[in-house]
Image 1 (spheres, helix red, strand yellow):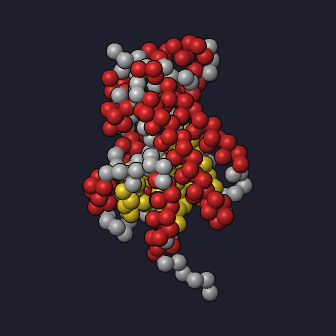
Image 2 (cartoon, helix red, strand yellow; image 1 turned 45 degrees about the vertical axis):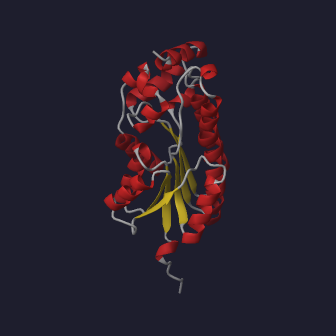
Image 3 (spheres, helix red, strand yellow; image 1 turned 135 degrees about the vertical axis):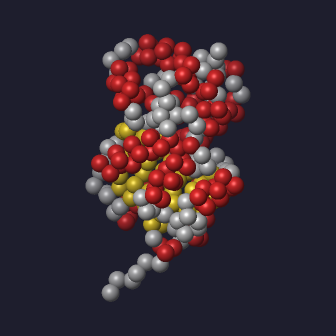
Amino acid sequence: MARKRSTAEEPWALVTGASSGIGAAFARALVARGERVIVVARRIERLRELQQELGGAGRVDVVALDLAAADGPGRLEAELRERGREIDLLVNNAGRGDTGRFVERPLEASLGVVDLNVRTAVEMCGRWLPAMVQRGRGRLINVVSMSAFQPVPFFAAYAASKAFLLSFTESLAGELEGTGVRVQALCPGNIRTEFQRVAGTDKVLFDRTPASSPEEVVAASLAALEKGTLVVVPGFQNRLTVAAQSLVPRRLSRRLAGELFRPR
């Protein structure tokens, strides 16, 4: 007779950047679907509030950690191994943006964007995908951005980091075909969350473009994940925008994007 799994061995979803916005919306949606969720972010008080809202420690596990730190993903892996957590879904949502002219912004700000959006995302995949492949099942959602589809002046490091993440995710999907691991690049447009204020995009024309709620974005993502859709752009108007970008000269799409993010 097969040994029954202990509670600690039951698979969990791991959501980074979960203290607000898309990350918190993912946690709520996944718990509503009956999944156990590990939420990771720096702000322990926000995570505790979310844990209590969603049913306590039996449904939601909390790890307060700065994934931007050089040893962040490694410390997270060690902590979850100690807790006996098997990860069936990884939502790489932690990210950072910085708005302004590159040469006028602190270099540390741009390097921080690249470090969290690229290095950390790649390392998280490298630490959890091998076990999924070995088990023959698993799911990965990398939260990308519509900024991945064209250069964005005044948001240069962020757009470039998301272009990397989109390409990386699509490449992973090709490598993981037939393994039982599903992969998604989630590419939302404008979402009014705390990210906008921290990144400074609440002070540019982009903030006036049509916005989706985090809940709408997450619902679209999870529905598409069930269907196996690789690149997901939530919102009909956003999909039209992406389609139009492929039809106009790249210099024009770059210019239009720059006007949306130019500091006023």
